[in-house]
Image (cartoon, rainbow, N blue to C red; front, side, top):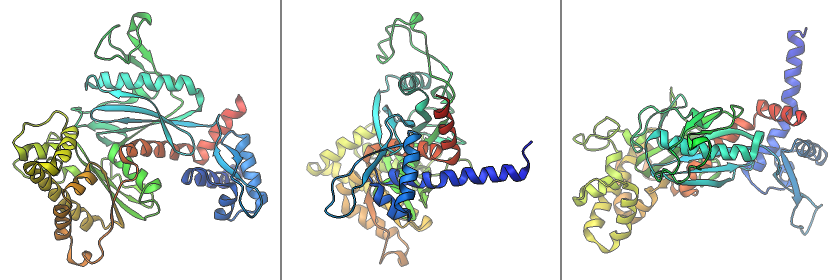
Length: 429
């Protein structure tokens, strides 16, 4: 029987075995296309150590090497890329109007494989459609799939969707996306969901793989902020405040590459701060939410239009019309003022080094820059005004949440436990 001391020695040996490997893989992930020589310099590895580690990672199908472009000086080197048979994660982005599924290898670049509009927002229909897409990807990649990571336009608590104002959902279980779930499908030929294949056993069920890959669920705005802090315009900053406008406002504060989730994981619901008119009731159940002051619903209200079914598209159309229509320009300016003022409050409270704007936040700012800038400056505490944090457009655009889902999935895979499990899988095949 193994003693506590021998088990401790074994654990230390495992730690040492993977420490250098994880450092190399992290560099490949941080800078896709990095050369082995550059990785060795950054990590302080000798040529021999770098060669030994990369050789071991090749044998485990974790990375491959391709010749680098010839340099004018120095020895030839190679570019580190994900192994073509290596682990992958499935990243899912569930938005108000549509959904996407992507596959990301160890370099973290999500490649969209499937997607489409919601033909119904009923949760069982949305989840069923996406689960079938995930199942097809699991059939294609098999045990290479090591995690399924979902970004959803919803409040997420303890990894579970508890409410989505924009989708009209209350508590919803996404477990069907992970494994061995039987997902109800519409009857054969249902025109409301053309993505459903017909002709199988009456067309009533679709199976979604097994439970070997964990399901990871996060708020879409939080994950977009994580991606900007890790690999986007704010990469390297210690404290990043990300604010996005889609249908309402979302975001997160990322400290040293980790988003602050709060006690239960539901943190970052910036749109439900009471920065708005207390006479307006938000679909979340609260009154006076910031959400209602900065998106397409606010612009429609200022113009006397009924609440739009798709506030994002309405806002995009209003931003396009604003330069030629004074009334629309005024409505956009009012929304931009509320955006700038609320952002000032967050800067005062959270003290970020950098602020990133995602979704429609940056187009709204650009369409009414004077109003936004004045409201932001006026709302900042006096000591902050001479050197406020830079406010930068997000680099990843509408793909931010998908990139963030990939980041979260790979954070799960690229651990000592994750690599040990992968090595065991490889040795058994």
